[in-house]
Image (cartoon, rainbow, N blue to C red; front, side, top):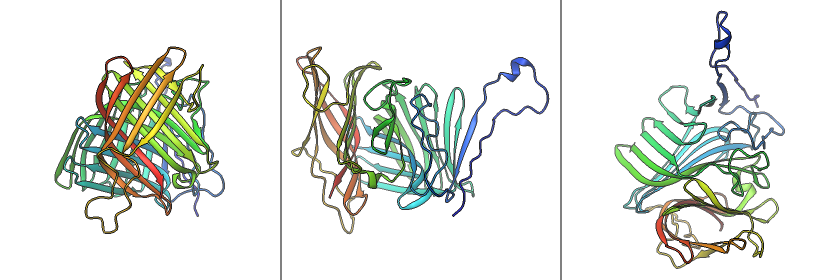
Length: 388
């Protein structure tokens, strides 16, 4: 076992004396993680709500900790979908890995998935932008992202022998914490559930994807988003069931997490509704209340699509138990009631996370809005984990 190697460097180095004005030039910092290098014992994990949402929240990795940036999108018709993960730390039973994962589904149902385990990841944090780069020593594989610190947009770029192109997001909502408070907020918390830390940099966004995947074009225009999670132990150990949904219907943007912890067996909930970048409803409460906001999520089973293994899989998994969601969001103080119905429309992936868990990503179609007012239709993207 070797010790984790950290490199923190200044992007602007003065070789000669500089003027007082030049000495105030903003500086960038870099944090580098190297495949296979980690420490024994516990790893320090940040929970500071004011740390910039793309800054590294894990500075030293041990044998179980991980940090993950997730990007997902669905096409305007709900027939094509994509998810990209950029991870540091233990993932897929590999300790201290540096990994990129992509899974796409074309409109005809054809799917592609690729894991790229590389040698090093570097997070570069500057006053106006943050970027991440995952690359191998040979230099022919690079996966990365960049975003301004205000999260107006984000671009993933992949350049490898098998995949080349970009995945762009343009924000339709402000960055939020679990529970829906808008970043930055000193009173907020990034701890969503036991050992589950979560930030939503792009709760809802317009998405545009142009990739060449082994000679086949994958082009998508639709909606999506991205978030970040970091955990002291693997997801499959600390999580049971979950449902993550982001959707856009007319002027409304919806972000939902419905999560059951394997640490304490309890359910955790977070739902936020946005309109024109403004949070107009938020709650972490699933209990009916006469005084505070609450939400109710019902799994539906009569929709057109269950999540399934890819066509041609030798030993396909049992399909998902449900086909979507009926979401009711109620504000007793304003007498407002939003309702959204989401049906899965395409499986992005569906595979085994462990002996007892299946995990999937989906595209979906959404309809709904404020009851008594105009109802809208749109697109959803999200993920599912369920006990086998």
